[in-house]
Length: 184
Image (tube, rainbow, N blue to C red; front, side, top):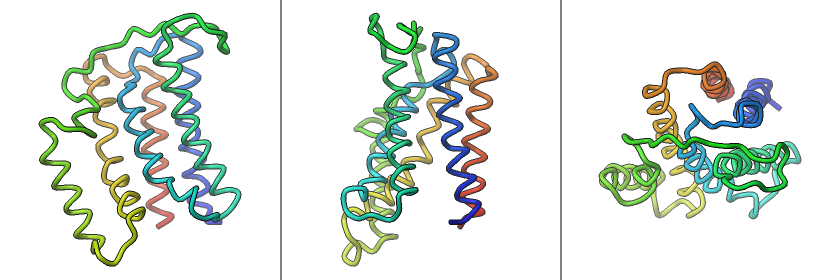
């Protein structure tokens, strides 16, 4: 196990715990983009499809499952609108309209469609379509998609200013990526 990867994974988990703590403590999702979390969920589901194909290690499998379920839990907390027996009953979210970048612009058909098609074709070209497995192309595309996932969060920060929790969340995400660069 590389120490840089361990630090990166722990920082990534910390970013999830920061958002979950903010949602549970303030009972508001002001300053947090649900659309960013939804795109991250798509990224993780695409990237970790290999969970069903082969086993690498307990650590690897555990971290992948934690990333998926932490993201699902964040989305659940942000989308919760009626009182359900939850950890702290109800989180009242005042959903902020994310005008400039919706997740459908990132994933589906919209004005970003041409850009995404370009990314996908570039992805196929880089991966040499005929020599690589389909799931590896999906994994590679998830890396490209992850680079766009933060844009809705940045839009929220530009509209509302930076709150301490979201600043810590962004710092943890940036730090986790920095340590993954050192891992490579």
